[in-house]
Amino acid sequence: MTSFDPKSISTARLHGYLLSAVAPRPIAFASTVDTNGNPNLSPFSYFNVFSSNPPILIFSPARRVRNNTTKHTLENARETKEVVINVVNYDIVQQMSLSSTEYAKDINEFDKSGLTMLESDVVKPFRVAESPVQFECRVNEIIELGTEGGAGNLIICEVLKFHIDDSVMDDNQIIVQEKLDLVARAGGSYYNRAKKGFFEIPKPLSTLGIGVDSMPNEIKNSMILTGNDLGMLGNIEVLPTKKEVEEFINNVSERYPNIKEMSHRQKHKIARNYLSYGDVNSAWKLLLS
Image 1: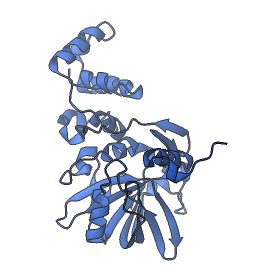
Image 2: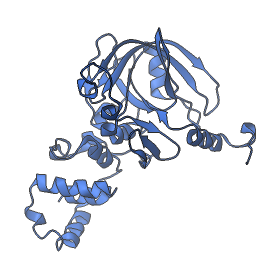
Image 3: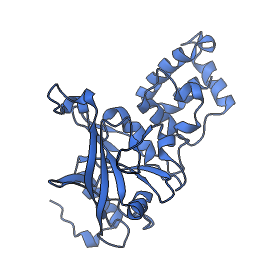
Image 4: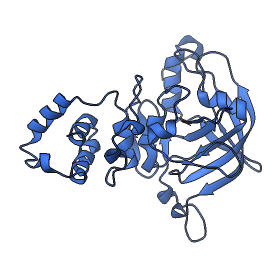
């Protein structure tokens, strides 16, 4: 075996080893607001349940390794002492990934990811309506584990009220794990779908994806494209140019001879096929034709 002294390797490399070795990890999809009521939404995989009586969840927004700055979630939790922790299932994993983009403080990640803000009953932060389980929490304590890049900040949350979608429970109101279909985080670009195993999602663009809110209405309100499809489409820096779209249509006209007469619905079905292969560029060119 190869042995390592944590102090003898870079923080970035140590971070990578820890995330790959301690996996898969559940995801806390944390919703907060600042003192002015502006929403923020971000996922964290340093997360778990630590007590049932009282019901305590802990997640940790670590200081950024590259520049030692802190996350908006941590700042908001300090200010307001409230958070909603939403679980992540497969149906929203791409939108969750898009929301992890480092948008500016005044940008609403609910809008960018195309997820729905749902008012909470006892705290100010919004719930994620599409999440099958949502925990409204009071922040009891925040423990700083260090001051350098990579240092965690344990946000100790007490569950005040929680909500479970009826569709993931049986007749006795017991959660059915297969119906819940949770997703967990692993190292690099890997995720784990509880009932199917590992899969990959490219990391969000450091240059900022356009987000769902910037899409034409017929796309973001599509009856064909799923939330995951929209999440993939939102993780693109700029839309294809008119020239690029025209060249694409000419290249695929032999395969789809009636492409110029297709309805939105028909185009959306073909775009979904491109997205299933991770070809976001072609999907966009088709959708914009």
